[in-house]
Image: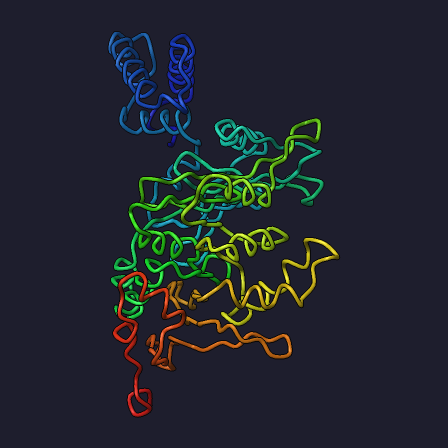
Length: 421
């Protein structure tokens, strides 16, 4: 908001009145937003009444003033319009005067300029709801905002001078596999196959780089889980939105000021097994929790998870390596065959230079291991023209499809050599 909408003195009076009225009401404007907006509306009406009597400075644009007050009091100040913009995927601050956004995978420098105190106050407001803390003893923080966006903050002296703030918005353009088909991320044939695979209880690993659409794809895959199944999700920060009724979501917790009370992802995976799950979803595996996930899947519990990787085969290699971080007594001789027997599919996501997120390949894992390498076969892959083509004639884990009532022979229609050329 510019000073043309209301004079500096007039706006200061209006802001002070609104804050005081909300304080006297005893509400939290971040939680009771509707009531806070109602108080702001009453404050503006009272201001205009006094303004017409000539006792207060002129208010030229009451709507603009209202929007600014709501953003400052009920939202996250100057960043709120960016959070409300559906075309913006991510917001980050390298310094108070360097505020960037990403649209369609491309970054833009905004004209927003803050000061260090404003950045600190904004971060404090964002962390207030999550209950997470940020100080010299804990200079990193991950938290969720009310709209589901993910907040990550790093402070000096880990950073050189300024607070580094990232807000990754969850722009849900797809909730089910057919939505991905409409967006061009999947073909109809691949969507039908993946829908049947998840419904049949196949274990699926979703891989890809940062911002490649892994979480969105995992949410879409979870929509294919049977409506009577009980789903337990484990995440570092709440991001998954499973469109089912019987769902329990759990997230990690950082240590308190005394250094106690931390709940890592490994603990969540172990606790999930005591909660009668029919399906286990893990937002992302990065470290030793991959071993607990393998043990869970090896017990017959179907599951889905994501991992950062450059390709489907790199994801398999990573899953064979991460469990070794759990301890010296864990060996590749145990991990590699376990990965082969646990996972059925790897679905790899990628993002092209234009920012489009697409499934680039679907790979099946075999049970055979030779010289420490798991046998794999490519089911779908994008060709040189960018089309996702079916390359396989047989589905993996055909017995699982049969038990679920699907006919495996109808799920894949491979292209011939002439068609591929």
